[in-house]
Image (cartoon, one colour):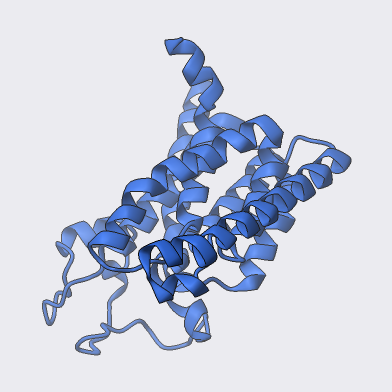
Length: 266
C-alpha cells in the first residue's frame, strides 16, 4: 500500500516537474532564435505594457487559466503557446515515467524530448532551428537507445543516408519537372527536406531501429499532409516546418507502436 502511494506521488511529481520544465522551454523557444541571454537578473515584464509580472502570475498552466490568457494589467493577449508547451511537457514527462520508471533511461529520454519540443516550436515559428540543438538531440539519442552502439551508428547512417538520397530525388523533381509543369519559378529553389530534418531522422533511427523508425517517418508524413496543403493553398507558403511532424511521428511510434496498433485491427 505504501509503495502504491509512493508511486502515485512520483507520478504527480513527474507531471509537476514537467510543467515547470515546460515553462523554462518557453523561455528557450523565445530567446534562443534571437540570441538573447537566457538567464537575466531582472524580473519578467509584459512585452506590451512593460509591467512587472509577479511570481504568482508565472505559475505554469494555472496562471494562464487564472488570467484567462491575458495580461492582468493591460489586457494584452498571452500566446497560447505558453500553456501548450507546459501542458505537452508535463504529459510527456508523466508518460515517460509510466513507461520507464525512475531510471537512467527515463532521464535521458526526458532530456531528449525537452530538446525536441524546443526544436519543434522554434521550427514552427521560424522554419529554421539552431544547429547545436539538432546535434544535442542526436547526441542524446545514443544514450537513450536500447540498441548497441554499433547498431545505433548503423541505423543513424542508414536513415540519414536514405533521407539525403530521397531528398535529392524529390528536390530534383520539384526544381526541374514540377516547376516547369506549373510554370512556377519559385519552385526552382525549393528543397524537399530542410537540412535540419536529417539529424532528427537519424535520431529516430537510433532510438527506434529500422522498422519502427520507418513507421515513425511514415506517420510524420501522414500528419504533415493536411497542414502542408493548407499552407500551400491558403497561406501561399511553399515551406512547411517538418520537424514538429517528425517529432509527433516519433512520439506516436515510441509510445503506441504502429505495428501493434495495426495488428489489433487486422
